[in-house]
Length: 287
Ligand code: SIN
Ligand code: FE
Image (tube, rainbow, N blue to C red; front, side, top):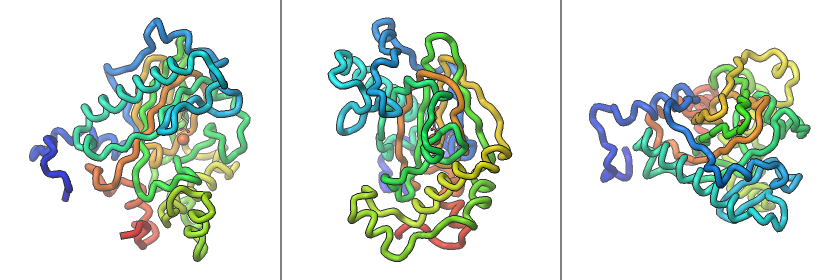
């Protein structure tokens, strides 16, 4: 039962939930007829010299802009661009899935200026390898990770992903060999400041799926996956905690992360927490 029954999205026919159901069950939806583009006054921001050379992306969060070059004279314009994208993403999502409006938690906004194919990250950080998203230091405690992407490549280059098997098949493959939390481990990680909040059994399993898949060379080479090309100008929304994905080529994208609690789901049985609970036969989140 929704806590907020006064929300205007109560719809006995369920039509208002059609997009949310589709997004939650299909995981990735390419937006038709909606996009975000840079204004002519923002076009010069598509320049790799804005990065600090260390961070993977330039990003915006509660603490301000991260990953930009120190004393970048365009810092305010970069921030304004990411704010404009954040607001567009939120409005688009709330318009398509009105039931999310009262639950949406806004995460980081990122401006991805690097060529994906160049990334020489460690295997665990290498997003060119198939994975579901899970963050070592930021347990979601069951909340979903929803991301809105737009390819803003100015020379028409597509952003290329590989999209893998469905979440349940992926989970069944890696859950049996997943390392479980040791007694006191979740408490220690939080106390030592390794994690921002307690790592739940759910977070531990998700992190294990992420790490095991990325570190498994045979899986990476032979896993079932199809290639998807998002043309320049395309926008897409993805539950990256359930869609097995890898970014293999492309440059210049904007991405907005949102978090949604399980209570917001229109199709809760499709949520990774519920799938993992069915597979393991135990509850993975604190009551
Ligand atoms: C990822 O979420 O793994 C990377 C997606 C992208 O940058 O296109
Ligand atoms: Fe990812």
